[in-house]
Amino acid sequence: MSQVPMVFGAEITLPAIGFGTGGIQGYAGVEALIQAFELGYRLIDSAVNYENEGTVGRAVRRSSVPREEIIVTSKLPGRHHAYDEALATIEESLFRTGLDYLDLYLIHWPLPRLDRYVEAWQALITARDRGLVRAIGVSNFLSSHIDRLIEETGVSPAVNQVELHPFFPQAEQRAYNADRGIVTQAWCPIGRAGDLLSHPLLGAIGERYGVSRAQVILRWHLQLGVVPIPKSSSPERQYENLDLFGFDLTDDEMTEITALGRPDGRLFGLDPATHEEF
Ligand SMILES: NC(=O)C1=CN([C@@H]2O[C@H](COP(=O)(O)OP(=O)(O)OC[C@H]3O[C@@H](n4cnc5c(N)ncnc54)[C@H](OP(=O)(O)O)[C@@H]3O)[C@@H](O)[C@H]2O)C=CC1
Ligand SMILES: O=C(O)C(=O)[C@@H](O)[C@H](O)C(=O)CO
Image 1 (cartoon, rainbow, N blue to C red):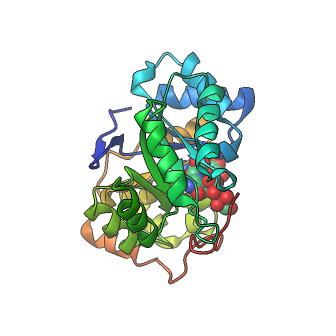
Image 2: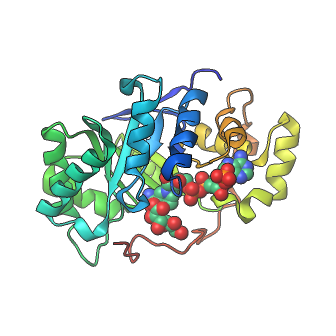
């Protein structure tokens, strides 16, 4: 596999494609992750709520890839937004991985009704200052939430990880993030292998290049400057999802794929303005 290019933000440089770990756990999960490292994945997405930080840490420690080449991400759940609890949760994430530091830590959801995300952000800043984590960011934050973080703490997130796929291209959020040097990461990038993956447009474009629909979608993310984090427990599909550098989508194809976007294209109806995930 050729070297994955990098994406540059104001606060962080990341591989152009990462690896999702939702549902990847236990011994099988360790093997899947070691396999992913061997194929060339270097950016790993985890979360307290995935209950797999131990799996991720074990795979990082057992892999032949040097620790400093791997970017390990975890996320703070909504039930621990209070400052002291957030700091303790980050420490526990670190202990569970068995690593000396984490590379990126995100607030998982803003939970605006609870209204403690600024406090949580202050804890992430402290964790970064103490060297527990190298960089800090957010997930599922709307622009108004990020404005508030910056206004109240002066610290901008390195990353905003949001739902982003052809049915929900998030043009405004991408532009907001890009204007501030915040790297946009895309969760559920291939729509969790649901209806999106059978869309005929993607099949037609894929046939032109001899690639799969998933590869067309992930190439679209790359050309938008967004970092997708597809999950796969299969070595074949892990390889397929990384094999994106032998073709280019034309401007017209990019426009056609983006036009699949729907007014509310969220696949699970999870609007960060109202969704509360503890
Ligand atoms: N911040 C947040 O709130 C959220 C973050 N995430 C993160 O984003 C990651 C990715 O999102 P996720 O929800 O997993 O969905 P994805 O869009 O990554 O889809 C994963 C599904 O697609 C299948 N798949 C993977 N590659 C292919 C392929 N090439 N062809 C056909 N099927 C394929 C996988 O099956 P198989 O494993 O069998 O290959 C799995 O069922 C998560 O794992 C998690 O890390 C996800 C949701 C919310
Ligand atoms: O997987 C995650 O990170 C989540 O936040 C999930 O709750 C996600 O929203 C989901 O799986 C929706 O079905």
